[in-house]
Image (cartoon, rainbow, N blue to C red; front, side):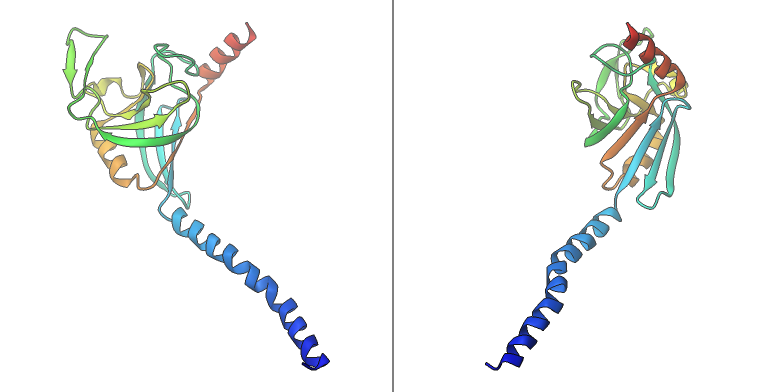
Length: 188
């Protein structure tokens, strides 16, 4: 091989190597974009009692009124009637149409269908029963009324489940009352 041929091979190698090395990054990038196109995020706002569902472009897909935990503040333990705050992953969407629950605020006793048609289970550290679900008590929507879950009208829950796609993230933000309660208890 002639010296000028060696130089040409080295030159072409040096020129092409960055492009060759970029191929895995380009493939990865297009996979991320492909996966992002079906993704979405759910924002729970405890201040104005709303659930907002956005697609990957930031376009609002759905906005619904909700109910949250009876007691203001961030959930610390089972049975504290608080809705957790933070960023959580959706574990599963479960058929809850035949689930029953004892309603504590009335004399109905055990009510079948108390969770509405679906239960969107959230991965909340230290908890195992927190989710977004429907209700048999539409008058509770817009209030602090649950034992810690997020309630919504059954029709709007069906709409959310139909559009949820690959949404895996739920962000729950506190209201001013929640912040004040948490600040008070954190100072003690």
